[in-house]
Each structure stands twice: as C-alpha cells, then as structure tokens.
Image (cartoon, rainbow, N blue to C red; front, side, top):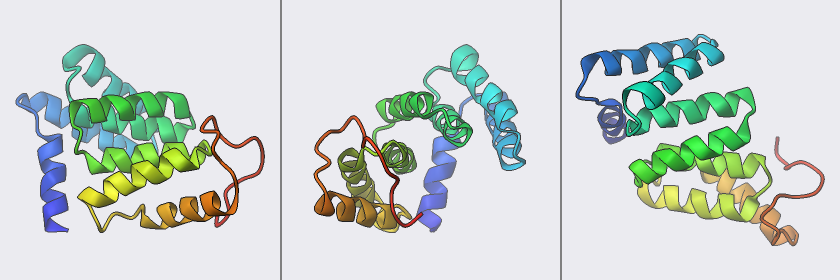
Length: 153
C-alpha cells in the first residue's frame, strides 16, 4: 500500500505548483460529488495548461465514467496510458470501461495487464467475472454484447 500511495503522489506531481493545486481542487470537487465542476477543472488542465499531464487525463477519465460518458472516458484513459503506459490505475479504469460496455475479452486482457503490475489490484474480481462470462458464452465480437447485463451486479 505504501508503494502504491507513493506512485499516486508521483503521478500527481507537476513542476508547476498551481497546476498541482488545481488537480487537488478537481479531486476534492469529484469527492464532494461535483462531477461536472471536477471535469471542467481537469479539462482546463489538459486543454489549456499541460496536455501531457497524465494524471489530469486520468481524473478526467474518471469523471466521464461516473457521468456515464463511456466513449470520452475511454479516450481520456487511452491518452493517460499513451503518456504513462505503466499507470495501472488508468488500466483499471480502461478495463472497467470495457467491462461496462460488455467488451469482456478486451477487459480481461486489460485487467491481466494491470494485475501484472499491481497484483493487489481490486480489479481481480472483475477479471474473474470476465473469464466466467467468456468461458460460458461466445463473446468474440468485441463491439459489445447485444443484450443482457453482466452478472454479479
């Protein structure tokens, strides 16, 4: 846990103190439930301040996810991983997007990648569900399942 917390601090680091403070302000807004305000802060950071600030992209992906905008969440997660390929929390988020959009095979692959970096990741239960679903049905179509919902929810 201490290593994970250290990595999170490294991810949040930015050479400009005001930018780092804005990231914290956005995170506080998100925790308070002000998702749209938080998203606006994170988007300002990546669009106007530093388009290479991976953690701001990751936080934007989280906001989009909780707002139900899976496509924008997917794009922000992919941007995070392009900038910081070993960001296992962004991998977790990407896997959750794939899971929620019923792309179970892709989700399983993403969750496995995350677990290779962080064996204690909370996504292990979702990986098990994906594997159960893949074992029990033919989900080769990675565009998403046509009907139904995932079990265990």
